[in-house]
Structure formats: C-alpha cells, structure tokens
Amino acid sequence: MTPLEAGGAISVGVNSLLVLGVLPVLLGALAAEHRLTDAGIGLAAMTEVLSMGVVTGLAGAVLKPRRLKTIGVIASLVLALIDAASANTSGVAVFVARGAAGAVEGVLLWITVAMIARTATPERWAGVFFTAQTLGQLLLALAFAVWVLPLWSASGAFLALAACAVAGALPALIGPSRLADLNPDAEIAGAPPLRGWIALVGTGVFVSGAGAVSVYLQPLAAQVGLDAGVARTALWVSLAGQVAGGALATLVAGRIRWLTVFVVVTVINFAVWRLFALHIPGCLFVGANAASGLSSVFLAPFLVPMTIEADPSRRAAMQSGAAQLVGGAAGPLLAAFAVSDADVHGALWLGVGLTLVGLAPLAWLHFSHRRTH
Image 1: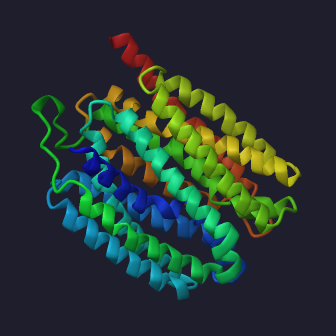
Image 2: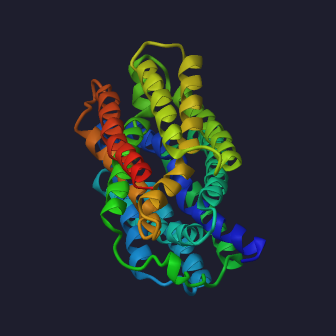
Image 3: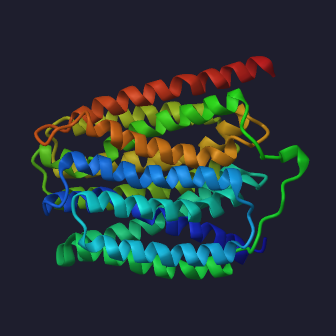
C-alpha cells in the first residue's frame, strides 16, 4: 500500500470507534434526561460494543478484503443515518439503534483490522491506529464537554456523531480497494488452534474488567459528590492520556515484553479503581482517569503480539479486535447486574475480578511458550 492508502485504512477504523470515546458521557446524558436508567447504561454500551465485536469477527472469518472502497463509503453513510435516528430515541429504542450502529461500525473496523493483521510489525501499526483513534476521540470528547452536550444535550450529540460518520466516507475513498492474500506461511483462514482460542478468551475477559468500570464513569463521579462537568473533563483528559499511551507504545514496540506491560497496567488500574471508591477531590479524580487512559492504550497494541505468540499462524490475531470488543461489551453487561441506582461501586470489584481471571491464562500461555521454545 501507498502511505495515503494506509492512512485511509487507519482512518476508516478511527471512524468506527469514535463513539467509544464519548459513550460514557453520552449514555450518562441519556440517563440524566430520564431516557435511560443507570442499569441501562451498561446494557446499552454492551449492545453496541457486542454487536461491533461480533460483526468484526464474522467479517474477518468469511469476507474477502475486496471492494473495500465501496464497502467503506456505504457503511459510513448508513452509520450516519443510524446516528441521526438515535437522536430522538429513549428506552428500548436506544438499544435497537445502538445495536444497529455497532453492526455497521464492526464492518468498518474489519477493514482496518485486516490491514494490521497482514503487516510484518502489527504492534507498531496497532500503535499508530490506537494513537490516531484516541486523538480523534479526544477532539470529539472536548467538543462534547465544552459545546455539544451543554448546548444541545444528548440529541445534539447523536447528530454530531452522524456528521462525523459522513466525514468518514472520505478516507474510505482514499483507502485501498483490496488487500493482498497472505502467503502460505501466514495463512489465517479457518479456526484458530486451542492456544489461539485461549488467548482470545483471555483477551476478552481481561478487557472486560476495564470495560465494567469505565462505562460507569459519570455515576462513579456522582456517587462521591462530583458533578457531570467533572466526569466530562475526566473523560477528555483520559483520552489525552490515551493519545500519549498509544504514541509511547508505538515507540517501544518490539523492545518490551507484552507480559510486563500487562502486569504494570493491571497494577495501575487497581490503584485508580481504589481511588474511585474514595471521596476524592475532582482534580484527583481527573488525574486518576489520565493515568488509567495512558495505561489502557499503552496496553492495547501488545494484545496482538500476545495473540501471535500463542498462535503463530495469525488466525487468532485476525480475531483479536473482535475479542477485545466482545470483552468490552461483556464488562458493561456484567456490571449492569453488579450496580444499582443507589450504589455503582460493585462495578469496581467486578473489574478487579475480571482482570485477574483474564490475566491468569495469558500468563500461562507465555510461560508455557517459553518452556517449549
């Protein structure tokens, strides 16, 4: 691919994931407007992210990377229509609309994942992707916090997402029309082997821990007496940390073991979640989110080499994005049963448990691989 085509392929994936950067405050705004319950926040987030993950996985398994320009443009425009239709939804209609949006976003994400899985240094390309993705989410979160939500509430925010989706059709036009077939040594057709499945399941469970906590950002702030403005500030500051984390991961790719990154990120997350359970000032709440944002995206590119180490055929790597999204959906779903309108701290304990359960099989894969080789 030319640099322009590579940039187009990365930008298509950025368009698909823009909503994830503002989902906590967007769903929180729906709850504040009594268009969604607090428990519904987790269920709505689960619906969209799970739909995205399932479609990304299915597309990676059955679709050939052909006619990508046409697919990208059509999917971007359909996404814009769904986002615009979401502006007047409430209750069950929110779940229907966001589930449909997630399916279209999954198709767009598949284009980027297919490109990254075919590169010689996937962790570096993944780092570029996550840096660009979080930068886009940061700009959108700033616009939501300063301008969109205060002036036009949740309905205006959905219309802003629709405008972004329309703009996303342009990079689809400049991206590649097709991707080359992989050579036999890197063939990814078919199901992954057992170790690959273990890596995918571990990925999903590990990621679900952070997802269970992050979607309740605004209620967690409210529980300790902080207003919605602090939560919105914490969100865009967290995204600024994510931009730094993605850039740092790109720089150190290939120079640090993935398991070391996983352990360090786990320790940071546990420290941040402990602070969330305390009555802390707004500045500390915002700073904790910055640290969490940096560590979470610093981790993300290392999920791909972890999966490739477990399954060198790269069949599992092709499904890594789907596993992350399914995990990101499962976390909010499980958290919906661990919280109530009166107390959302159950999401913190759930996050700790899921993180440890997910980390255990991944560590086993690493040490058993080292003994074998």
